[in-house]
Image (cartoon, rainbow, N blue to C red; front, top):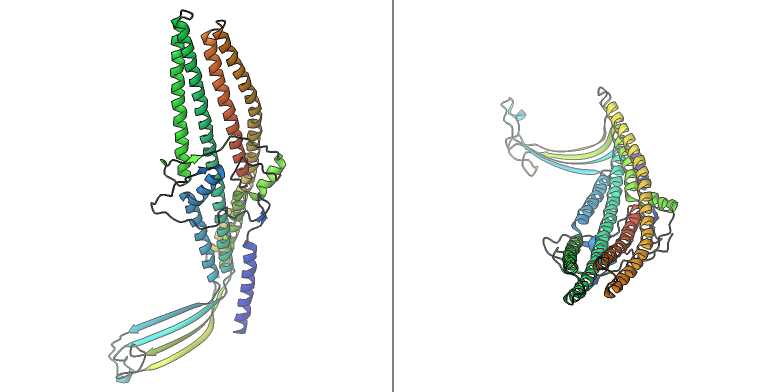
Length: 476
C-alpha cells in the first residue's frame, strides 16, 4: 500500500505539472491590459430566447452599441459559446479520471442441483451477494495525464474559437453598419441630384415656353429626371437591405425600425507593417488555435504510446453473501459470509502484431501535419495583414483625391448652370455637370466607407477588438 500511495502522489504531481503546461499563454490586449489570446470578448453567459423577440432599442444606436448588441444576442455566437462550455466540462470530466472510483454490485442467483448429501446442495432460497469496491489508478502509461492535457488544450482552443467568432462578428456588424451609412449618404446625394435636375427641368421648361430653348432640351431634362428617380429608388432599396441585415446580425427582427446613427469620419491609422505583424502573431486567435492543435495531436500520440506500458491500479473491496435478499440466513442449507480483499492489478499487452507501433506512427504523422498547417497559417496571416494594410493606405489616398473631385465638380456645375442661365451654355452641359457632381459625391462617400471598412478588417487581422472605428486609438 505504501508503494501505491507513493506512485499515486507522483502521478498527481505530474498531473499538476500538466495543468500548468496546458494553461493559456498571456498577452497584452488592445487596451493595454493583460489578456490571454483565447479570452472571449464577452464573458457572460448568452441565453436562448426560445422564439421571443428582443426589445427594439428606442434611442440612437451607434456603432459600438450595435457591436455590443450583436455580441450579446447573436445566436451564432451562442452556439460557439455552448461549444466552449462543453469543452470546459470535458476538461473537468477528464480530470475526474485521476481520482478513485467507487463501485457497487448486487446479484441474486437461484440454482437447483440434485446432489448427495443434501448439505452440498445450493440454498433453497437462492444466493445473494452485495459488493463494494474502491479502485485507484496507479499507473496507466501516462494515458490519463495525456487525456486530461488534451481536454484542457481543446477547451483553450474552443475558447479561442469563441473569440475568433466574436471578432468576425464585430467586423461583419461594422461592415454592414458602414454600408448602411454609405447608402444613407448615397440616398441624400441622389435626392440632391434629383432636386437639381428638377430645377433644371423647371428652368428649361420656362425657357422653352418663351421660345428661348428647343423642345429637345425639355425632353432631355425629363429623361434625366426619370433616371435620377430610378437611381434614388435603387439607393433607398440598398439602404433598407443593409438595415434589414444589420438588424439580423443584432438578433432583431429584419422589419424592426432602429435608428442607427453615425458619420463617415475617418481617423488616422499610423502603425507600420512590422507593428501590425507583431500584433497579429501575438494576438490572433486562429494562430493560438493552430498551436493548440499541434499540442493536441502530440497528446493524442502520447495516449497511443501508453499502450507500450503496463496498466496498474490498486483496489479494495468488500462483499457479503447470504441466502435471503437482505443477506441473512434462512431455511435449510443456509449460509452467510463476508469477504475483504485488498490488492493491485496489472495488465500489459506485450505483443499485438504491430498494432500499437503503427498507431504510434500514424499519430506522429498527424503531429507533423498539424505543424505544417500551423506554418502555412502563419504565412497566410502575414499576407492577410499586409493586404489589409495596403487597403487602408489605398482608401486613405482616395479620400484626398475624392475631396478635390467634389470641389471641382461643384465648381463646374455652378459654372455650367450660370452659363446656361445667361444663354451661353447648353442644357447638356448642365446635365453632364450635375451627373459628374453626383458621381464625385458618391466616390467621396465610397472612399470614406472603404477606409473605415479596411480599418475594421486590419483590426480583426491583428486580433484586436475595437467596437468603435471612429475613435482615435492612440496605442501604437
